[in-house]
Length: 186
Ligand SMILES: Cc1cc2nc3c(=O)[nH]c(=O)nc-3n(C[C@H](O)[C@H](O)[C@H](O)COP(=O)(O)O)c2cc1C
Image 1 (tube, rainbow, N blue to C red):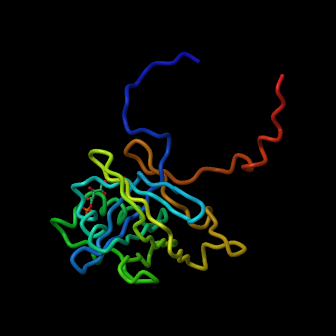
Image 2: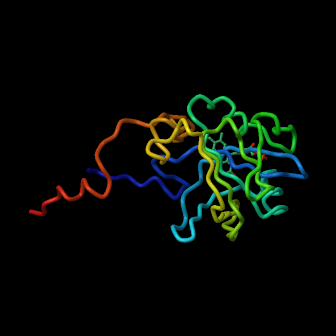
Image 3: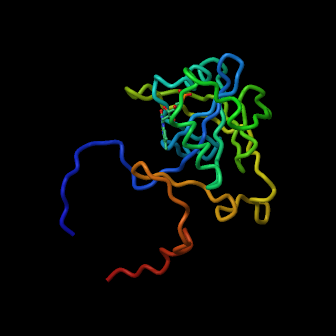
C-alpha cells in the first residue's frame, strides 16, 4: 500500500455520536459530542473532549457532574440540532425530556435509549478542548434495547460519526477476542 502524509489533525476513522447533558444555571442543556470514549474499567470511567467555548462546560464546572446520552438513529435531527445551536443563544432544555438519577444534577435525556450519569473525576486542559473524565455513577437503559439484560447495539441503533456525516452501524464482521484465534503466522 502506498502511503501519503495528511498532517496532524484530530482524526479517527469513526467516532460515536452522543449528547452530553449538563445543568447550566439550573436548566438542562444538551450538546452533541463525537470526541468521546471509555477511559477506565475499574472504576468505570469515560471521557469527553469539550471546547472551552461551549455553554455545556459552564454546567460541568458548576455541578461537577454530566451525563452522556446515546441517541438512536431516529433522533438524528434533534441530535444534530444540539450540535448546531449553543445554549448561550438558545434554550435547548426542551429538545429532550429531562429526568434525574443518582447524581441529581446531571440531566438525562429520556428519549435516548441509554443514559449514563457521570461524576467529574478530572479534567485535562489540552488546548482548545478540555478533556473531562467522568466516573460512571449509573447507567439507565430502556428495557426495549436490552438482550439478556445487556445493551444490544442492533436495538440501540446508535449514530456513528465520520467526516461531517452520520452513519448507522454496519453488519457484524466477526467476534472480538475470538477472531484472532484464527491467526496463523507463516
Ligand atoms: C456531529 C457533531 C459532533 C460534535 N462534537 C463535538 C465535540 O466532540 N466536542 C465539542 O466541543 N464540540 C462538538 N460539537 C460542537 C458542539 O456540539 C456545538 O458547538 C454545540 O452548539 C455546543 O453546545 P453548547 O454551547 O450549548 O454547549 C459537535 C457538533 C456536531 C454536529
